Image (tube, rainbow, N blue to C red; front, side, top):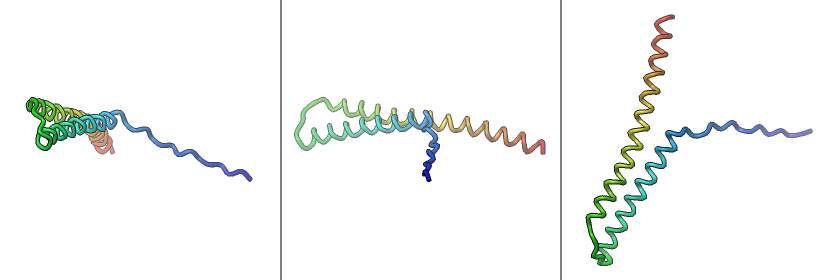
Length: 93
């Protein structure tokens, strides 16, 4: 008697979710880098240009905002199509 294992049919992750994850990870990396620079300035007495931190933080939050906005915009458009299709089917019946 042979034992047959079925392969699970796992759906691949949507591309928009990959974009969202990459945006969050890269944004958080920029924010952690800015925190590390702040640590260097305060604790270790680094005397460099402080304007770099504000630029890095702005870039990090902009990256997160852009990725999240794209994802929600895409989800909104998909839901509008689903609601429109359901409304037409309910009107017919």
